[in-house]
Amino acid sequence: MNPAPIALFVYARPEHTRSVIEGLATNPMFGDSDLWVFSDAPKDNRDSEAVESVRSLIKQVRGPRRLEVVEQSENLGLSRSIIDGVSRLCGTYGKCIVLEDDIVPTPYFLEYVNEALELYKDDEQVMSIGCYSFSDGRALPDTFFLRVPDCWGWAVWARSWRFFEEDGQKLLYELDRLDLKQEIDFGGVYPYYRMLEDHANGLNDSWAVRWYAATLLRNGLVLYPGMSVTDNVGFDNTGTHTGSHRGKPPNTLAHRSIPVVDIPVEVSELGTEVWRNVMRNMQPNLVEGLFASMREKLGRLRRHARARTTGSPN
Image 1 (cartoon, rainbow, N blue to C red):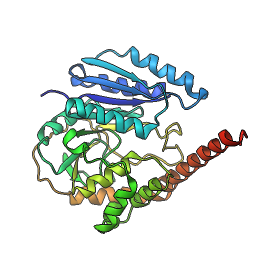
Image 2: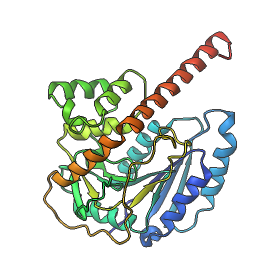
Image 3: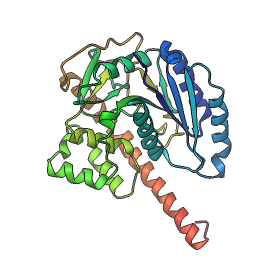
Image 4: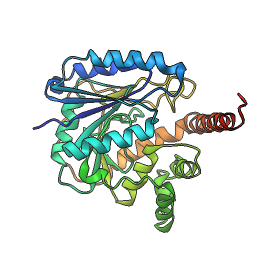
């Protein structure tokens, strides 16, 4: 098996980035993998020192078969960075594994995701591989399928990533035409449709909600492990869309290898029930906080734009 390349997207959080690298180093397959690090440029001078610290750290990484560092000369933002980086690696390798600088892999991460990529490489209905699985205390099967893609450690093939659609308005039109609003909201428990509307109206720049809509419109499925092979350590108010006051969705970290075997390619009823239960319970704080942070960020961008036009600092 030829391991998929790993795309790691970093910005200005050196300690988080260090944790991700240390997590990767615990994986036996890391030495056989190519690691591509996409380092975004600072938004402004306030982030310059932290960005340089991350870049210095990345250049010292030892362990992967090949290390490639892409240092952007201008700030792309997380969404554009991920879209461009994933497209680049899929175009070169035909597949890729994706991590952000706050998604820490367990020692079982690369084994699971590479085996899944190999097993389902020719199954057009399987659109991607997820790694972070919600938990409400009930035992889930070793692997199962859902409709919603993961963004906290995931993997994809070029054959499916080609269906990613950047135009949110086009996605909304197709969802409405096919009457899929309830479906994309995971049975009405999570406002993904509203997130996509907000994207179309310039209130967020989420690549993930567009990827979800594109996956749903293809009737695609996503493989998940019963126990998470990644952990999100970004709920400390340092990330783009997270904050400590909103809380991390519960998960159970893998303490062993995840067997990846051929199972029926169909939505798991138990998995869906567990995820809906978790989403329903976290909605009052996580979701509303997420939208509030997006709107606050948009307000700052608009104020900055006015300041450039008028010369006023506010």
